[in-house]
Structures are given as C-alpha cells and as structure tokens.
Image (spheres, rainbow, N blue to C red):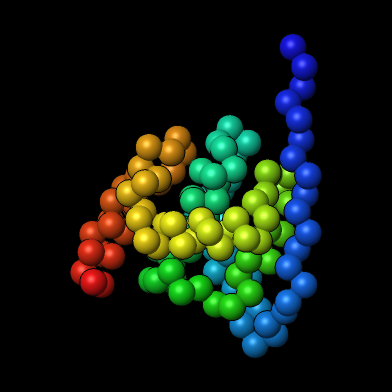
Length: 124
C-alpha cells in the first residue's frame, strides 16, 4: 500500500494588519491549545475545531483582522494539512451561517456547535 499524497503547503497571505496582529495571534494560539488539531482528523475537521474554539473564546465569528495568517502558521508549523486563505474564510462563513452542517464531521466539537447554533438563532 502506498503512502498517501502530501498536500502542498499553501502560501501565507501577504497582507498584514499590525494593529490587530497580536490579538489575532493570541486568539488563534489559545484556541489551538484548547482544540489541538490531529492528523487523525480531516483538514475540514481541524479547521472547524479551531474556528469553533476561536468563537468560544472571542464570543463572535468577527475575528480580529489578519487571523488567517496565524491560523495557517499554526497548522503549517505542526505539519497538519492546512487550508488555503480562501478556504479558511469560506469555512468561517459556513460555520457562522450554518454551524449544524458540521455536526457529522468526525472530530468536530459537537457540544460547542450545538451551543453555537442556539446562540446564533438569537441573532436573527
């Protein structure tokens, strides 16, 4: 049986937001510690775990500008398959608009996603 193909490492976004960089890095690192990615989970599951963890800490899905770069760096440094910037933003939008679609994703934090659904229903 052959070794699974390794995904290419996507390039990091080149835009930098100096004023919010530290806040974004701190948010990503705290969520990363609370919900560490695993090579046993899919790239989607790991991204959703991080995003839901960031929501739990931050209290909303409106993360500090520039959050994508530290999220990607955290994945790349640990050798975890990393979505590209467009994919990260798409996952955030999907989690924000319909978190329940990730309930069946193996490795996703189901209890937090259910709580997120309840919280978002009140924002209509």
